[in-house]
Amino acid sequence: MKQVKLEYKKEYCSTCNAIHSKLDGGDIIDCMIYYRNHLEPKEIKEARESKVEVWNGKEWIKANNRHL
Ligand SMILES: [Zn+2]
Image (cartoon, rainbow, N blue to C red; front, side):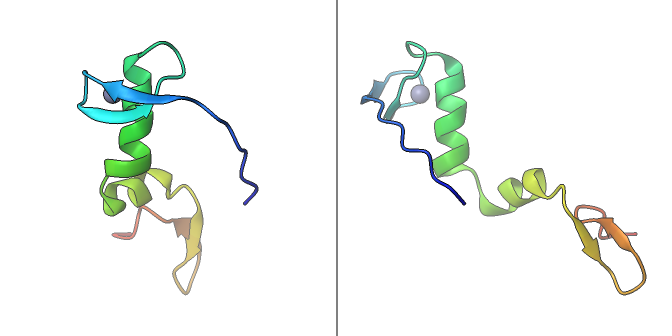
């Protein structure tokens, strides 16, 4: 995957007690981005990103519909 290099100044955020870049002047969105990139549990991230279809042996199903 091509990585876009973006240089943003990282600074302490009093909203979430972390040091992250503030793209838009310390918007809560920046905290969400930081959370998703650094703190979000792997399972949750995978569930959110699993829009791809998987082969269950018979048919292609949505990856997050394994109970089917
Ligand atoms: Zn923050």
